[in-house]
Length: 108
Image 1 (tube, rainbow, N blue to C red):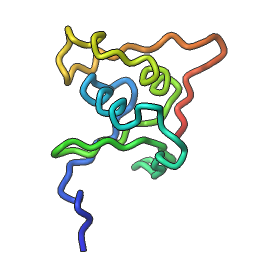
Image 2 (cartoon, helix red, strand yellow):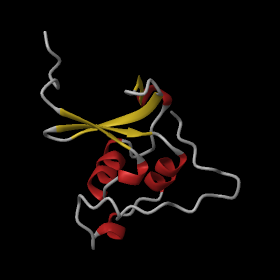
Image 3 (cartoon, rainbow, N blue to C red):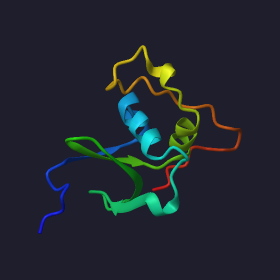
Image 4 (cartoon, rainbow, N blue to C red):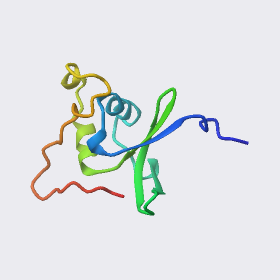
């Protein structure tokens, strides 16, 4: 038996490709941030271990790579910051200011 989401397109999203639409969906699904039990781990085509959180639209399942930048951006999310951008604009989401010494860790 196929899983109910087998028909969905699957897309892996790095922070650099994060759009306002995907960010809004993440904040809606994980309003208090995500926990370790909500992180999905898998190997990519290069056999690298990837850790991501999942968010689904009507036709696509996004796996967004977990990183310090993602956590900080979700924490400081304000939808008004993105009202002048298209929902699918990957240049809208800017790198957050990280505390000194808090390098962006790609947790994968």
